[in-house]
Image (cartoon, rainbow, N blue to C red; front, side, top):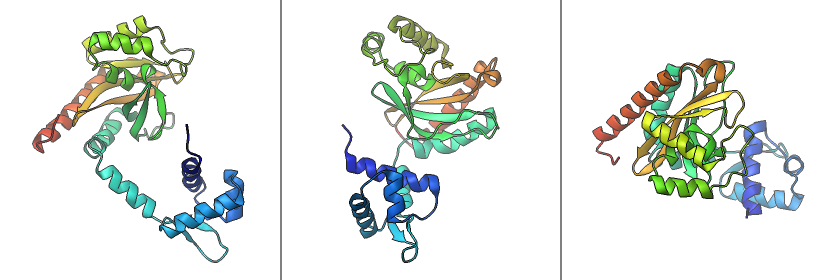
Length: 251
């Protein structure tokens, strides 16, 4: 069950992220489909805590950088992001494709960080977006860490309601694909969620937290490159582990 006040605040900041202009109470109320009284209360609360300011009298409101600073401090404490981000950028440059870091959240993965390809035609996703864990290469990589009997049980109990027409939803076939990927050392998403997009993923275990690191792009560019991309992924993960060992971190 969602909390309405929290949803309103999320939509409030997403509005400014999209529009990037000051907005009056009336404009905010209309854009967010919120009563004027609720909008006024939200603005007042955020102003009192330093997250919002009035650019000039009756000239509209705009967020301060306080949200950025707080978010940056949060990200600095993430045991995976601070270790992996620069390596993801290097992998994106090497492969020319989008690189994604994902963690498990129930029957889904949530992207923790993304490095988007600079090519005109590319796969694009943002941090915070979700995908079905069984349909994504990084999700399969995360599932592969389970013992076989646990994996079978997970796949049988999985929620497949967000599958699309190309997703594999047969638990036995998924088990075969995942164990095949485990033996091979990397996992494949062959247009199983986004049409005409493939991905190659591997398991990344940092500080006891299992994540999936993947490279995704249009089929016509990835076709015939799966092994090459898997090798680049493997080198990247080895470099992350080597850096972690140098720092005396836990793997």
